[in-house]
Length: 315
Length: 155
Image (cartoon, rainbow over the protein chains, first blue to last red):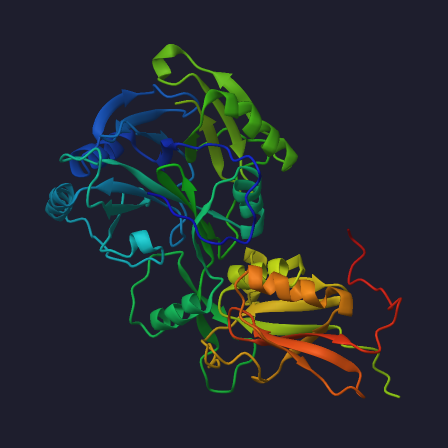
């Protein structure tokens, strides 16, 4: 069940009813190595090649929920040590099987902590062969249980201005805030604990800031929470992390690209989202109609204010 | 006569920024103005996180305290915990402020009457959600057309 907390940006009168995350596109360098890791180690179901629209050359793997992950061949792999990650929901039983397979392949597993209450439990993190950080979120009762990956739980993207993102996703589209990090004293105090080396936090959640005044002979750096906002995307979650450095963005004219996150909305909402995007100064593409074999009817593409590739699509 | 014209703004430390912004805007009628350190540019410079709100011509910068401040007991509504902000309203609007506080469930002390030969009429005393002391009062010497000046000329 999603809950919401006070946000800095007010919700609009009409909210776009997002039901959840659809498919996501993840950048990889080698399709065979990607298939082997996602299917043989993580337990996704192999679901074909080059079947999803606007994903370039890709391999498709599916979670038990039916949500698909397009492993797309990209020249640019994810930057290291940022908040960017993909989180998959598993049952405790499935997790043990995955951990056993990771151990058999000598793949290191991390057990970072996070701030969002729903992620404070014992999570595990692993890098895929291409540097994508994957988080396994253990759900006490995953509706699509079984031995495999149950569902896509959340996706973490980054941006260079949290306010731009909140104004678009919260203020215009009406996605409510599930958790906000970096605007309360409690977050600062928790960051100090990390600074003392007492808490192993996930990349992108903390940062070292330069002190305004540095007494001679003292540490010029101070531990701070890195700003994050987690939005309710229907049954799933969309995490936005403040970038702590400037990374190369895709070319301005490229609107459809990968990596990409898709949100599922009713068909009549696609034009409404397109209107909001244009009002926000973005350049949406579509709605684009797909062949029946794709599995959903239409998609609207946009690049959000954080330069992330986003898709809104029909169920 | 001092060269200083008036007080322009105050930086107030709070424990929870969204909660504080909501309080100053909803309860005291402030307007959200500007945020700092919500961008990578600011983060790289290590700027403090704050959001400023405007009450008429006065700006209050609500900053996130990096550590919990020792605050007075919940039941203590009147004091000067380092400082107290006193806002003036017209006598006609004084009752509305009390009604607003009641409707938001904000406990206050008063109205307390001030000496009849002084400029202050009555005051009420309360705290923001982080525990910073606040006061609202009316003045016996209120002008029928007080100088109206705004922090920024926006409606």
